Image 1 (tube, rainbow, N blue to C red):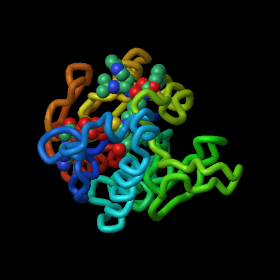
Image 2: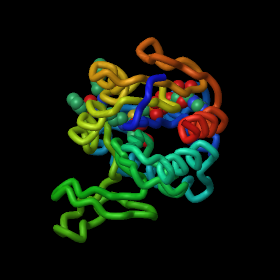
Image 3: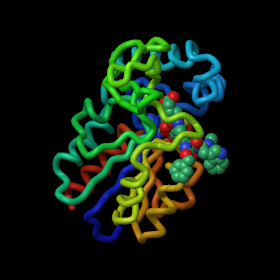
Image 4: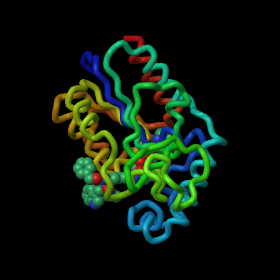
Length: 233
Ligand code: BJW
């Protein structure tokens, strides 16, 4: 790969799989037993808030039982030691990147440990269960919901992400199936602006053909090896 200084990394559920968190698609996936439209749309939240809140309460509780793995730790090391620009954009709503020590991070699909007020858009840290109709401390409306980007809603910080994609000279995608937009299109945006592109995934993703290089295997092996390479340059 050519010389590079400015890296954008996209992570997905595959990076947390070796920590024991289920991915979404495939056998044993998180939505097996739940239809996605029953839990992950604004319509589902309006129709059956108890089901949707319970689904995310269980996911939030499961976080306490898991820990960051070698892939999260390697990206935290990259963040600490890489002297150039770096942005890690995660689609994941878990907090394993932060717990590994990564700072240059944004959560484009929301966070399990945060609540969002549907009335005033306030976001507040929320580590425990979140019953429907919980009042918002900012505006008083009984409107706190999981701070999760549902299908049909705009992911967070898209302008910042688009700017970073346009400016980077290396785009790396880790542990994502490339099934959900706009994240699935980031590789094309980065290529359009001239970046090198690398995929690290267990199997070829939906957008594999867009990547200049694909390395297949578990993130817990591939990511530390790649970070060693980058920091040795
Ligand atoms: C490993 C591994 C190991 C396993 N090591 N790897 C038609 C065409 C195009 C788009 C649309 C369309 N119709 C609707 C849309 C838009 C829609 C969309 O993309 N739908 C698709 C289903 C087609 N998108 C949206 O609605 C988004 N909003 C939007 O588009 O707004 C408008 C807009 C316009 C213009 C610009 C910007 C925006 C919102 C999407 C919200 C997604 N939310 C979810 C749920 C979050 C809450 C929760 O966690 O419950 O986010 S969906 C779910 O999928 C979650 C994930 O972040 C996301 C991606 O999944 P991910 O991470 O890729 O996981 P998997 O399971 O799919 O893949 C895991 C991968 O890891 C696999 O490849 C494994 O092989 C691999 N793996 N073990 C390495 N050990």
